[in-house]
Structure formats: structure tokens, C-alpha cells
Image (cartoon, rainbow, N blue to C red; front, top):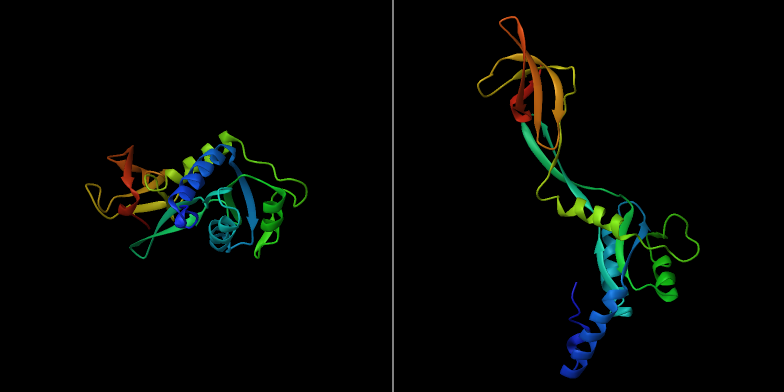
Length: 201
């Protein structure tokens, strides 16, 4: 989000707006807005657009935390984004009674959790660091939805253990790895294999 619209006047005015905005940033706190499920993006756009223009310098960033879910079906790999907190939009505000009323009056919004009464309570810094960390890590860490379970019999389709059959002992969804117990020459041997190389028997 930028402050390009308020800067469209004179140079002196622009300097005043920037200075005021930077000073007010210190007063921002993160709040949770409860939206109707499926309308999170619309609510975020309203906060970033109409509400931001109505209260310049008092509306900060918005956040809808997501993670990437990868699963394999019929030999093909699919990746999609999944909301970590469906029905919730996180927003930086320099809170005021007017802003609270306008947000509660928005379409597709039920208010501020846990109850739509009284003044909303901001999130703690530790809570926001945790939430932002989950979102920041999306590009580096994918959660892979592996369709088989511990105890199932599977067959390896690729690699040095191709056509070997074994039993799933453990699954590491973050790494996309499966530990399988094979019986080789009468002895049990655990082997870690990429989930893409395994099929349910």
C-alpha cells in the first residue's frame, strides 16, 4: 500500500503528509477483523482502499495469512493456497471510535472477535510475529498433503528401490518424505523415500 493519492497536491503538502504518516506509524497496532467466510479479500480491499482514503495515515497494512498445500492425484501434482485463518483479516490501525464504527458497518464483516462489543483489543507483538512468520515462510516451506497413512502397504515406483513393497512407518509432510519398512533378506530395513516415488498397493 502506498500514500500516492494524498501526495497528489503540492510538494509542501506532500512533505507534511509523509512526515505525519511516518509519525503516526508508531501508533499502529494489529487488530483482527472477522469477515464472512470467502469474503476475506473483499474486506482487505475495502480496508486498503475506501477506509484508507477516508482516514489517511491511520490505516496500515492488511494481512490474510496463507500456506501452500501440495497434493498428488492420479500421478499429477497440484498446489493451492489455503488460508491459515479462514474468516479473519489482520489489519494495522491507529484505532478510533469512528474507524471502529465504519469497520463494523462494512458489508461482509461481523465485527471484531471475540465479541462485537466494546473497544477491540490489539494483538500482542509476539502473536503477530508468530502469524507473520507463518506467512513469510510460505515460499520456503510447503505443506504436502500425502494421501497414504502410517501402516499402509505401498510400492516404490522409482529409484533404487523400484518395485519394492513395504509398510509406511512415518510421514514427514513438510519435507515430502516417507519412511518405509522393507523386508530385505529376512531383515527389516527402514528407508526414507520421496513421496512422489511411492504408490499405494
